[in-house]
Image: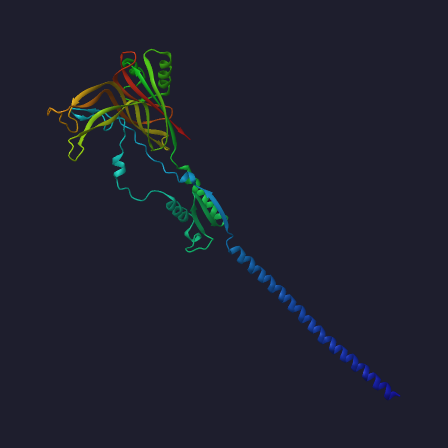
Amino acid sequence: MRKGILIVTLCVVSAFALVYAAYGQSQEYIDKLKESERHIALLKKVDDAIATIEKDRKPQSQLKFIDITDLMIRIPDYSPPSPFVYDVESGWVGGGGGGGISFDDEESEDWEGELFGPDELIELIKSRTDDENWPEGADGFGTIELHRNKLIVCNTPEVIKKVENILEVVRSNLPALISSTVYLFATDENYLKQVRKKGSSIITPEAIRKLIADAQAGGKVELLRTGYLAAYSSQAVYLYSGTMHTYQGDTDTSGAGGLTPIEMFDPIINIFREGFIVGLRAQYNRHTDHVNLVAMVSLSKLTAIEVHKGIGGGFAEDKEGGVTACKIETPKVDLQIVSGSSDVPEGYGLLLGGSRMQTTQAEQKSFVVLIVPAVQK
């Protein structure tokens, strides 16, 4: 009996021992599994952190179209016309520079550098935003191109903002728009001395108002013409107010050829511009807030057209063997030209002239040109 109980007891103890051993091994396995899970979670956090860092390091591209039409405008110069006057005996007179402004010396100089254009603008942008932001051979990202006066920029928002700031700086230094009012007065010398300071061609705003008021009231000063010019700083423009007259300045004769003795007489028609021509170049100085005016003014009046008989460009024999005279016309004009340049402060005017002229009132007066510039800021 006791032997049986002992055997049962040993079996139970062995079973418990086996169960305990198995449980111990399972617990150790479970602990190792939990440790592995913690390692895996830690590795996942590391991977997430690395992905976040890589994402932050990788530029976030943005595509933007920036309109730069105002920066691509070419500002041309406009040369004023000249009154053409042909004289039979001495040739052309008064035609070369009548009313014109010549800047040939400036245009013929070999200036260093090229004209500022799209390529130069893009090069400026790249150099001021770090060339590394615009890699060579970039495919999409880090590119800047011009299409129909619009910059197509693909880069980070920060770089694009820098590009826009650079364009604003360029815009702030564009040539200013200057509008000039041009007056043509006829007055006597005594009145002219009252409004013009001795030795100066600049007159004050008060003197300008007096000139206009006196002209409107009628009396010592007469307002003959008023015109307006608008141009960019440094742009050459002109104003013409008057009438064009045609005249036969010469005759071109030529043979018809062949066996027929025929001479062809072709009249050569010239044009004379009567009236008021102003050539003007105004340049604004941002530092002094003054406008530098360079002006040349011509005032021409047709007094008569004389008819002459001459050979002209050839001759023809009549039936009796004599020479057929050709008709040539010569305009007789009163042509006066004044020019000058000066730095004009805001609100002031440039007063040119003082030459004698015959007015509609049949009085000898001086013609005076007043130019009053205004900068459109």
